[in-house]
Image: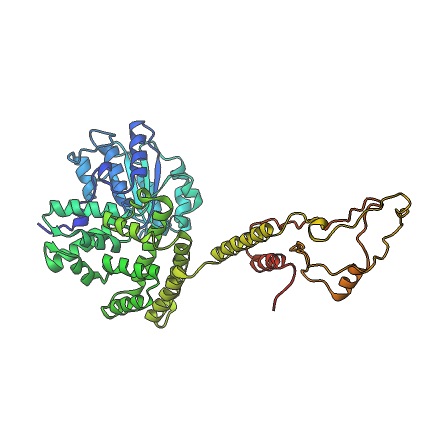
Amino acid sequence: MAYEVLARKWRPKTFDDVVGQGHVTRTLANAIEQDRIAHAYLFIGPRGIGKTTLSRILAMALNCEHGPTTHPCGECDNCKGIAAGADMDVIELDAASNNKVEDIHGVLDQVQFAPSHSRFKIFILDEVHMLSNAAFNALLKTLEEPPPYVKFIFATTEGDKVLPTIVSRCQRFDLRRISTGDIVRRLRFICNAESIAITDDALLAIARGSNGGLRDALSALDQLIAFKGTDLGEADVLAVFGLVSREALENLAGSILQGDIPGILRTVAALDESGKDMRRLTAELLWHFRNLLVFQQAGAELARQDVTEEQLAALEAQSKLAPPQRIVEITGLLSEMEARLRAALSVRTLVEMTLIRCARAAKTVSLDEVLRRLTALRDQTIRRLAAAAPQGVAAADAVPPRTAPTSPAAAPSAPAACQPNPPRPAVAPRAVPISLNEPAALDAEDDESEDALEPCAAPGTGIEAETPPAQPIPAEPLKTSDGQYVDEILNHALRLFGGRVLV
């Protein structure tokens, strides 16, 4: 008997066996149980995640001799024929090679005939986005009102290329990439069943290289078994597929977060000399920092969906090395590098320069932090000046008071303006509060005019007018909107130093 690859041998036979697509399998199972089966379904998603598998399982569930059922038996003639692709009432068509309108006319001719031995006649069109516009238009009327015994199941990797008129006539299901943890668990189950000894790090390396596709992971596992046998380790996976080990990747990320530029350069040189793909390294490093940001913002429960327990422990340790805003900046730099790698003449140089920028970004004080520190320093200075300056200074505290007139005759008669004063004796200088909004020193002419005139006072009271107390500047938070950094800093700096610029 010919050898059957793992991807075909372990293809799921029931909805429960499908990995990572619970939102789709639950809906289809409920529709069968409630007898709400639609006449057309559209499965959209990347390669190797179960589109064709779900199409066949749905066909088996509808045409099983014990159905419609959510758990097809897999033993009846209908189930075996559908699983082998040999059932006459389940027609699978590759739309990539049968994309002309004449090919769709052949499908429409078969629609007119009832199923020969099954409950439904089911048409499965794979890569349906490859059909021409004429072929799509020829299918519209039949797809909208098919005979009750006809079901259409479409599968495609590019849902945006399917005509909206086709999508509106189907129940659409968007399949997602399978998480790394789910792929590792499925691979472990298959390896145990196949008596294959493989380490957890090796399984993780295979899952990382599959980009969320379980079929790709199983094909890689098949290739590794042919290369090394049934005893596999992480080094075997790295040697065959050119991947970077988990430990090296986490050490490189740690060097970036700690600002260890010599360590970054040594790691990149070692990886480049060993023939590692720098583009794949960039993608995996970007994914690592994405997981780190998810861990910081949403916690371990959400991050666990995409990583294993060993990776989760590393994320927990590295989450304390830098705040989330710096992780976001590092992620942005890595994204820019990933887009520029295709046109780079020296890939290694671009990777080294970008990782150095990432290391500096991890340790450089951000502008928001500078503004916070400036605000705190300004508020502290204002509070210190306000505490040192008296709130009100009476003239009696610093200058001996004058004697008020003893008789009405001696009192001046309501002068219309302040009169010149006689020369005053020299007195010790007194402390006068200075407002931060006014200059601290006066010109010489102002000093002379102040000595020449006495402050105005109520006639006959002998009480001099007092200087109003200094009012502290209210502490307002600095704004950090784009385009206002310089204006706000200068504005508050001028207010803080009384409108004077010290050079």
